[in-house]
Length: 203
Image (cartoon, rainbow, N blue to C red; front, side, top):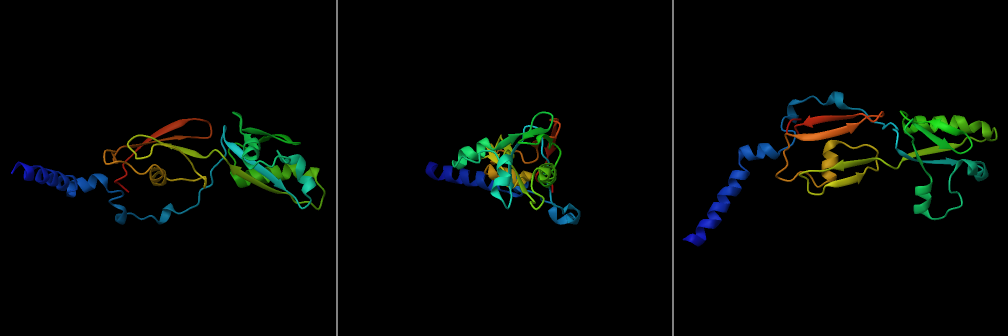
C-alpha cells in the first residue's frame, strides 16, 4: 500500500501545478486576441551610442582610392582584422576616422552615419569616384539574468531584439520565474538607465 501512495501523491501534485490556475501563471500574452495590433507596425533602426563599436569599410571602383580610408588593409587575418578595424565611439559621440579626423556619429543610424562619412571623404577622391560606405555595429548585445535556463550575454546580429526574443536566447524563463514581474533595464544615448516592470502574461 505504501508503494502505491507515493506515485498517487506525485500525480496529484502534477495535476495541481498544471491546473487552470497554474496555466495562467505561465501562459504569455493571454489577452492578445482582444488587442488591435495594427498600430504596432514599423521597422526599427538602432542609433549609435557612446561606447559602441563600429566596423566601417570604404569601397571604390579603384581599390587604391579606398586604401587611405580603411584600417588594416594589409592584414589577412580575418579575426584580427575585424578587431583592429573597429572604431570605438568616445564619450562625446565621436570616432577618429582616417584622413578626415573626428566625425560625430552618436545619435545617427547606420545609414545616416554612412552618408556623413561619404560626404566627408568624397572631396579627397576623383570626381568619377562614388565611394560605398558600409557601417556595422559590432557591439550590439543584451544581457539576460535571473530565473532563465541559460543566463548570460548574447550578441544580437540583427541590431534589433524584442524582450521575447531575448528570453528565447536565454532558453526562456524557468517554471520558478515570475512572468508577471520581469525587469527590463534600458540605457539611452546619453547613458541614462531606466527600469520597467513588465507582466508577460498580459499582452
